[in-house]
Length: 280
Image (cartoon, rainbow, N blue to C red; front, side):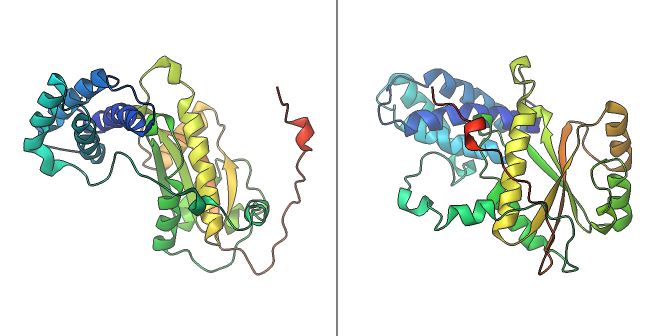
């Protein structure tokens, strides 16, 4: 817990359980006490180091909200009081929101989802960093195990670097030399601690990747997924080429750009729903 990155993943793993408890309408008043104590111990490490990370600050806000609900209990009151002297470190975000379902509907969801295609040739119009970060901000609403958000993106714009990276990827023949912006989407292995989670980085990374693709689509930026199911030797070649953190597991590459006014795309018909669906 002295490692800031690992501590922050631990913070979010624990505080999210308290958020879930607070969100339930039929909540057991005594539930969550053990995790509240664990979270306090994690936050004590942040206080000792005097180095609060983003998730530490959110954890402090959530723990304060949670203990305020159990102040009538002896331990809850004690915890709540102990937090007050570091309350200025707390985030303003975290805890519970109330939302209206009427704001969650797309006017024409079929047009949005079925109108997305893999674009392999892009216009010369460059993507502004602000627009890319706008898409990333939206994509980060993707769900992840315990809300750990173990995602990382490397953004490549240098033509020579992009060409070298794509030379190690075997699905860009015929158009890779035209790619002007390439994202490498990764999962941070530091977020996962149990052998039971050995596949979770692929799952969370895949969910985030799809969220990123749809976020880009929502603001008119096209994309093409480029598979990174590679052997260890090829993965190491990519890491020698680029300063990718050793703990970042590469999920996929994503070529991005604005589509031309008209584009030729693969129809890629989808299988009948009956072939992939069974009601039990």
